Every structure is written in C-alpha cells, then in structure tokens.
Length: 438
Ligand code: ASP
Image (cartoon, rainbow, N blue to C red; front, side):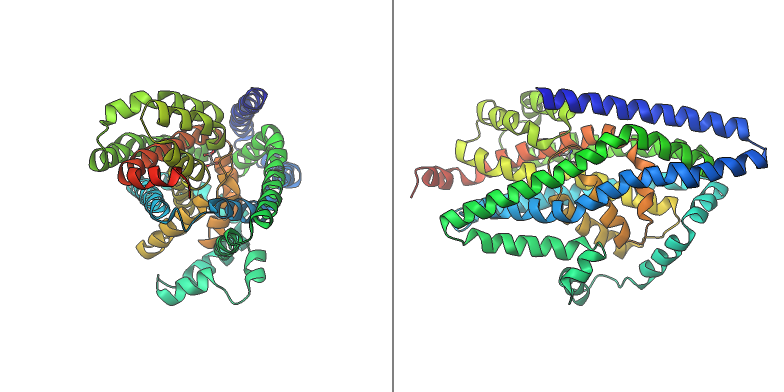
C-alpha cells in the first residue's frame, strides 16, 4: 500500500511543480517582455542556475540507462528458463507482442505526422531553442544526414558494431539490447543453481538501477519547474501550447489503440466480444492508471485474466509476467511520438525510411523498458541520440510525462491481457500438457 501512496504523492508534487513552473515562467516572461536588460539577466539565471540544476536530474536518469537496460532485459530472458519446452507458446507470445507494439507505434507516428504538433512553435521560438543547443543540434543533424537508409548491412552495423563497449559509451542502446538478449539466452542453458544465482544477481542489479531512477524522480518536483521556467525565459510560452497539443494527440492515439486495435485483435483471434473484455479488465485499467506500473498491476492482471476471462493458469503465468516486462505497446507508442515531436520542435527532418527505422528501434527499446513509473524516459534519451535530436529536448516533455505514463501503462497491461487471451485460445491443449509437468 505504501509504495503506490508514496508514488501518488510524488506524482502530485511533480504535477504541482509543473503547474507552478508554467505559471512562474509565463509571469516572468510577461513582466520582462520588451525589457532587454531584464531579459539578459533572466537568461543568465536560466543558464547558470536553472539549467545546471535540471541537468543534475537528467544526468541521474542518464546514469541509469546502461545498467537498467542490460540487467532488466537479460533477467527477462534468463527467466524464460524452459524456452525449449515453451517454444511454440513463446513464439506466438513474442509474435503478438511485436505486432501489438508495431501497430501502436505506427498509429502514434501517423497522428504526429498528420497534426505536426512540434511545428506549432513559431520560428523565433524554435530559433531560440536551436540557438540554445546550436552546436549539439548541428552535430546531431550532421549525424542524422549520414544515417543510411534501412538495409541488411546497416542493421548488422547497428546491432553488432565492431566495438561493443565504444557503442555503449556513445549511448547506442541497440547493441546493448542484443548483447543482453544473447547473454540471457546463454544464461537459460546454465545448470539450475548457476542460473538461479545469475538470476538473483540480475534482480539486484535491476533493483539498484531502478532506485537510481527513483532518486532522480525525487528531484523531479523541483527540477521540472526549474527546467520549465528556463524554457519559458529562453524560448517563450508558445512551447507550452504545443506541449498541450502534443499531450492531447498522444492520448487520442492511445485511445484509438486501446479500443480500436485491441478490439480488432480480440475479434480476429478470440471468441470473447470486446465489450465483455473491457468490462472484465476494468480493475486492471484502474490499477494501471493509478500506479503507472505494469509490475505493480501484475497481480491484478493475473487474477482478472484467470478468473474473469477464463485464461488457463499456465498461459497466464507465462504470458503475463513476460508481458509486464517486455510487452509495452503504450510505451512504444509514446516513445515514437516523443521522438517525432521533438524532431519537429528542433527542425530535424525524419524521412519515411528513418521513420520505419524509428518504428523498429522504438519497439526494441520498449521491450527494454521496466514496468515501473517513468521507466521509458532514459530509453527515450538513447532514441533521441540515434536520430540526431538534442537529448536535452526530453526536458520539454518531462513535466507532462506522468499523465502520459498513467495512460501508456493502461495500454501496456491491457495488451498483456489481450495477448494472454489469444495465446490461451491458440495453445490450450499444449499448455495443459505442459502444466501436467515432465
Ligand atoms: N510506467 C510504464 C509501465 O510500467 C513504463 C514506462 O513507459 O515508463 O508499464
């Protein structure tokens, strides 16, 4: 009880910080408008005090990226353990995970491409922002230009660079993801007691990295207003208007995915009418929304899918824990939207080929996101760097992240329940045999 209560309090304080930052930023900007001497001093305060403070928060998140991705993903794979026995069920489960996440990202990208919320920022504001990150933005834009179109050779280069460590140092998360999966697969072949030891070491590493994210989140109620005020001073409040449009568009895409895509999947692959499904999973939705954590929702998800949707025990206990760590369709949708939105804000053009690559990378990185509040933020930083968008841009969306975290977690766990229902219908005889045990 105390963890959700604490995280609720924290969420409220971040929201209050966000509102206070917006109000203070708009006020300061309005009062100083037209007075160049004041504006100069304000810019000095923003650069010398507010920005470095914001950086403390952001860099704490950056610290967590590599250990978190590595340990949580390798743990997920090692936990599979009996991969050979569970082969057919695993293949179907992963297939549905990938399908669900890909459709989610495609939907998000479609909405962002259609309404282009990042373009809502006027030229002067964008120039101010670009000015602020000029050298980095230029450097990244150069990198983006050299990104080749999608090809087999490029994918090999992307996932398997000659020097893994250098890639990781450069914040390229994909080789790390592949490395963690491969090492995890090797871990499943260890003898029983060795596997248990590896598993518990990885559990500890994941917990530590998650605590680091929690330290960062404790700073958020102060860092968020500092960053918002700084953005207002440097760039003006029109950033905030387009932020509101961004939130509304993300929520709209999430709603379409929740009630549209999931209903289609249920209709195509199960005998459960979508209306009945959504009535049954109400408790799952409420828990996910209020905790912003797939992991915290997992006990409810297992109970409801078994008791109200009739999913077998063995399917539920295989698909749902895996889904809580790997199947993140709301997160994938959100990550794609953030990258495209910030690319629009910074004037970085992402052609169709690059957006296809974005879809693939987003799905892969969503798999690496842990089922805890705010877990996707560090991964988004890695994605931004991959597409030549200034990583500091994440400061723009951090204030609204919690609201969208609540919404995306609902999508994440609902997709797990849908997957469990479908896999159960497809594999029931096999899983029944399996649960009888070897
Ligand atoms: N809070 C999300 C979850 O637990 C993960 C994220 O996208 O931050 O499912």
